[in-house]
Image (cartoon, rainbow, N blue to C red; front, top):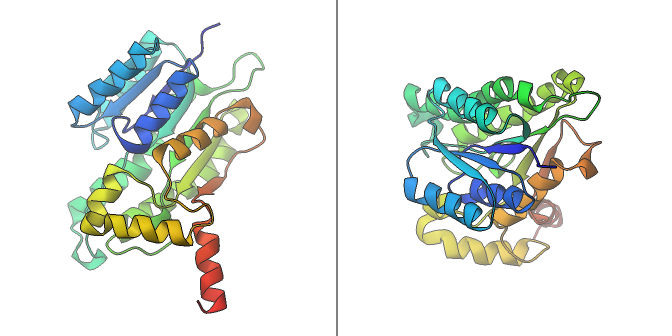
Length: 262
């Protein structure tokens, strides 16, 4: 029996790409959205199709609600139903909060928290349980900046924290439709976004993370993809409304260092 599709926003790079590849490996058709990087989007599509999977890549600007609606309609027309909606897209201006402009506030909110909520509204009919069967899952990709203060991350961190709150409320509201809703909060990851933000300090951060993190290395998008896949699998059927921190123990080590005076 064929498997239902998975919709991943911001699928062309980083965590989104790894998530798309992971679900495709399990036999799920993938519909991924991207905004600008057509070359990366097409390389993902080719990788999935060359492995025998099905993939649609759709241009969707999370600032334009109708583009997300069109992506969900694409899923309905071609695949019928969804197993998972993964809200991964993010965008912000890395600035001090006091220098942030109104349009930058709107953009960050719209691409993160608003697109999660609107995406849940759009996807719920394709995710809900049918005939007594469990429904699908929604997974939001949060960020370490929702829990730890990072320079110039105040706006994005606040919006990611809002996503985590929405996850709890959506888990309750959608329970009657047998849809589970969770979030993943990564630690420091080796992604294009991290390299852009950290610039020439990236390798220094890699070494520091390896030294202080109990697992002894920086995380990868593939690490996150495995957790997202688990949260959408039957084995996690008793988990909903949760934000799972996946940071290799970084926060535990940081707290331990502070409490010991190290």
